Length: 401
Image (cartoon, rainbow, N blue to C red):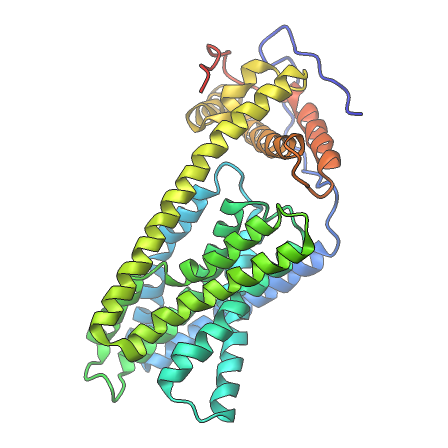
């Protein structure tokens, strides 16, 4: 049983020496093969970087290559920020986010390309058939394989709606980024079907893909990501497989509908499908925001329950739950006690957030791998940091929400 921490009589920022650096985090339980996977994804990422530059050179000259890379990069910061914002309360490890992007941009592209080339050589398929049927059937499973492997290997990464949405979205961003480089390069060179080439053609393609449909690939895979977020909360293996299968089928169908509207439907069909998918994206965004607001309430409720047990001081709760107060706590530590103190506050906040969500899941009957062990491990890490924790003076107790 974890040792109960008696609430201090002084403010949470009790006496203690601030160390010269933040202690290294001890992951509990430790993940096997992590170093090998990290090295593998670094190598894959470097190979993808080289491949992306090579793909841009298919434009034929320096200007075309620069436009291809530049146009692919322009929407990326905003798109990445959108998923970072969704993931702020219960952030997944950075290494998984980077791995998701690398998988989408390198591994998934390679798998999908191999399948499409093989299908084109084995069967007499038109470009429209390849785009409408083969592309969705190859690209969505190739992208979704990262989520499935993550789900099977380390279920604590995807454990809800938002997690599935975020990881799926980042995989989709990686895929779209590399795919767009190729499309911009091809547009710059020109094709017999399109009487436009050069800068005008690349810019037109950028407007269509980079401005009006940057969330296409993330949206397609979101169905599978959400299905895994639901599946992780189910106890029946049959239901898990069924929900995941339905999610992938929906991802493939959305992708196929989008491509078929371009290949067979004509302008009116494309506009109709564009509007339908746009409404779906809007509904998904609203749902994600609603869930995110719910996370705030869950966090405050769980932290209050933890404080009642004496594991944290009640005065810490505002500085661990609401973003404005969290930011103010880090700023206070930095201005009055230095950068290391600010990093300690940041680490403490992240540990408390993870612990609170985990504690809430356990108390509400949801299964979490090594849930109790991880909760006590997080509390131990918080206890180790507490002597050097420098929080602002206690605030007025939070009003009930």
